[in-house]
Image (cartoon, rainbow, N blue to C red; front, top):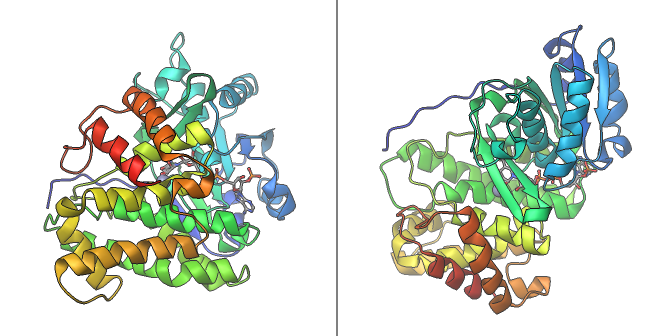
Length: 386
Ligand code: NZQ
Ligand code: ZN
């Protein structure tokens, strides 16, 4: 097992009715910037319950944080946060709203004279950030209790992350009931994103991290059980609760502690979203199978372990590993996510060309758990995903 440090300061309030915890978490004297997305919280009943829980506080609203939150939009929220002198940010929505809140919290307290864009990519130190609270309406990214944020800037074709302990949310409310209004496409996206967060930290090479392996296998098995149930029945709250907790735990830090990791699917996926506006999870569903096939020999032992323990497959390592990739592809397709670029109307050669130009702007090679994948390898992986 590799050395690791683990820190997870976010208090999680899980279950139905936990929105009421807002009244205890946010001080009565707080000036709160409430941030949300395109309006789902107004059609699914979250909004009035939210305002009731915040009663007595001074609340300023910023709506319209888009999927794949945009830097330009967030700067407007920072202006409001400063002019209203807020001392809390409350994010209500999915990963995009939460990530946006993390940027707002950091940029509002950034040292005078520093370009806020430098926050993204961790190119300037942070000394302070507003406290953040989260009411999660879409389980997928784990952003509600981690210290990462992914921000997009359309003008420069950038989609980049920053990580800082100052932006760990202070608390997160995870009420499965709030997810009942998710359309099937987003349920599929959330299940597949959580699944691939787990595989990025598990399908590498054996590292004697036995508990972490079994935790990953538990998450993957549970997602395979409850994903189709969640998709089939929007009122199955038990399925939703398990999905919500799996999505949280997949990027909470425990699965990857002491493990080699491979974030290549995410690296290429972020560029696909920038270039073609594919949903985050759609990009991963296309790239991961191709990556697993391209790196088959390097990942063979873990693929075979995955096939046996998660899918119950039997046979030689090679046969089980191939069958495990096929089963994974079938699962993504059953969750409603196509696994080929052609299914999204994209030509693999053209995509590969575009990736070869954009990816080096954001990543230093070599990549992958063995630090051996070059740009040429990544381009080949994209071509294989046609
Ligand atoms: O904007 P509204 O109207 O709220 O609609 C949203 C949005 O259109 C909708 N939605 C959310 N909750 C809903 C709902 N619709 C109906 N009922 C509800 N209860 O869902 C749509 C997508 O939401 P979004 O927040 O964009 O999705 P997701 O949670 O997948 O977040 C994606 C973003 O997170 C980043 C991605 O790159 C992308 O920018 N990631 C963040 C990570 C992190 N911070 O750790 C890690 C991830 O790997 C990922 O990169
Ligand atoms: Zn992801």
